[in-house]
Length: 263
Image (tube, rainbow, N blue to C red):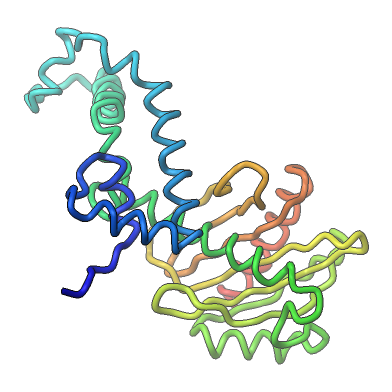
C-alpha cells in the first residue's frame, strides 16, 4: 500500500490530537525528513502554548449572564445603536478563547484561513531570503546594472508589472533579481546590499484579493518580513536590520512598488 503524503494541515491535526493513531509513525518520519516542516510544527506548538497560557485563565471563567445568549447563538432582535460594538467585542473574545484549537486548523475557519495566507507569503519570502542572500557568488540570475531589462524580465515571468525600487537613499544598491517558485506560480526576488554587507530582499508574487499588511518572523533570531497584499499582489520585504531602519526601507520600497503597479 502506498503511504499517503502529508501536508501542513496534518501538523495542525497532530497538534490538536486529531491525527489518526495509525498515521502517527509515518507522520513523524515525514517531519524528520522535512526540516522546514518540522521547524514549522515546532513553531505552531510554541504558538499554541503561548496562546493557551495567555487565554487559558479566561477560558475557565464562567460566561457572564449578559453574554450567555451570544454563546447560544441567540442575538437580540434590535440591539441599541450605542451597545452594538460591546456585543461584537464580547463575541470576538468568546470566539478567540473558545476556538483556540480551531485557530490552528489549516484551511478551515475564517481565522485559520487568513493566517495561513499571510504566513505563507511571509514564510516563503523569508525562505527565499535565507536561501539566496547567503549565496555570495551567485545570489541573482539577472544583475541589477540594467534595471529596465531586469524589471521587464521579472514582469514577464510573474505576470505582474514590477519595478525594482531605488534604495540608494537608504544606502542599498541593487544586486539583481531572480525568479523563485511559490506554490503553483512563480515569484520575483530582488536582492540589495549595503557597504557593510547587509542584504535586503523584496519578494513579489500574484496573491489573492485579500487586503492585509503586517510584520512577521518565523522564529526569534530569524529575518523579519514586512508584508502587504492587495488587489491580486503580494509583497514582502525581508531583512535582519534594526526595526527603525527596516521600517524606513520597507515604506520607501512599497511606495515605489505601488506607483509602478498603478502606472
